[in-house]
Image (cartoon, rainbow, N blue to C red):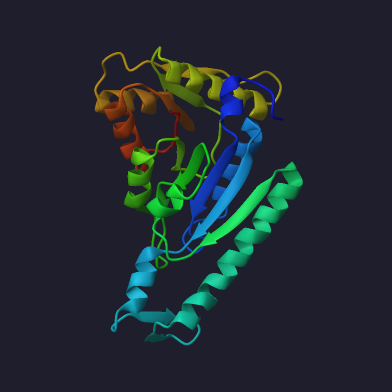
Length: 255
């Protein structure tokens, strides 16, 4: 599993960071598939919703109890109780995935830390983040913190916009640089791993001086399920990541 291209050997660990209370466990499936395809270990970093923690400290913070229909004051015991179920489910899913795929997987709980701090504590070469979250029982919201962490990361980042993450129609946005070649190598490996029968084709798009809006429009015409970005142009890479919360495809940035 650890053979293959030089690029796949460079990525020895894939880390996924998420709050089990706000993010579907399907994100773990995406991180697992990526780790298995690249022959890497998986590190799951379970974090707290910082907004919920801040609200719990406020004297007017209230929590709605669905069974009683009443609102009650926040307290530490209630928050721990609410988190216990999602944490247990996430750990169970990780145990099942690691056993099924014979994957080396570690789990760390990092309560009370912001996402940027969590990312700084991981030694993974590739980070998996959801570009959206669903808080307090509401709908999907762009996770600005995740987008910021992705833009500042020195390593590769997969920003998940759609679950599950599919390689059915994979498009690589790259130039002729070394990072562009690495992006192509990763794409080829993912397609080989996930294809049934003959390997699925990999679409390729060179920015060729296109503006961000034009590039995103061209990508939309190609109807990708996953876009892999390998560009020397840092500003263009950041602009594509910025769209990850609004476009119907996930974005894997190779660095």
